[in-house]
Length: 327
Image (cartoon, rainbow, N blue to C red; front, top):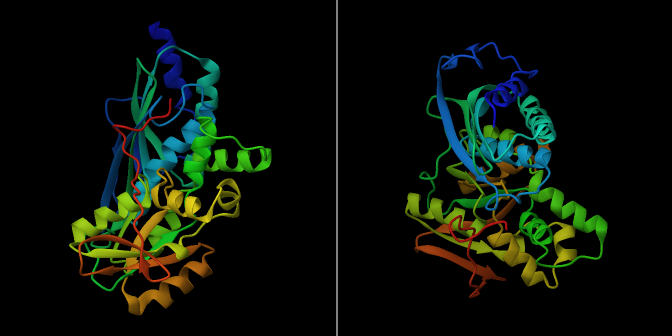
């Protein structure tokens, strides 16, 4: 790959509409220069997406770009942070002008939606992979973490769960679906997730703990349970399921198990003291954000699944990046 081609790649990423006042120097120098607002902490998260593990080699680059940025913005949402800046390291096996055009279109479309400016990064030759570092602001002492949950707190999730796993199964042809509209909707939801930034900001000062669902509800709730030293009960009949997921699955039980295990959902799971449940439900309703109360935290260790108040023994696990892949 000629150096001139990488110079061309650099020019792809210089043309963006977002120009933030807190960015003094962005793309084109050895480092970016930015300013953090007074009274705020800087929230930083880095994630990588690798072809064959997080997306198919021949996946639509516009969808891949959306997924890459959205999954990183979801980390900021989980901390209650307002997104500001992003850096991009892109590794490409070969120069492909069409792929880059489509990738940039998807990337900058979402970046503009959340007023995020690309401030730097790197390009190199190798197996297709995308690494993003996102940065955002949260007022001092108001960041949401995984360690503040207390016994008796209610457990909530935003949105609906399970669609991403169903969409992935269709993309991998692990199953068939004769309803083309249903198939398209589920495939799109696997890629075109909406980071719950507004919900995360609204949870400041109310939620006792929070994280985003990237590895599956069971796996990710386990992080709150461990970090906070509590147990949890999940009421499976309260899991939020889309009509498309129910139509896709052969049984209600299968849909519920997908909701528990589906990775790459990028909804928020958060806990709230019981006396603030009405407040948070009213607040989210006013903002048009769907939330579902799906359980509560307990003194016992681990996570217990309940159906109509009775324990059930389902062997459900989440996404493991070292054993799972998109082939």
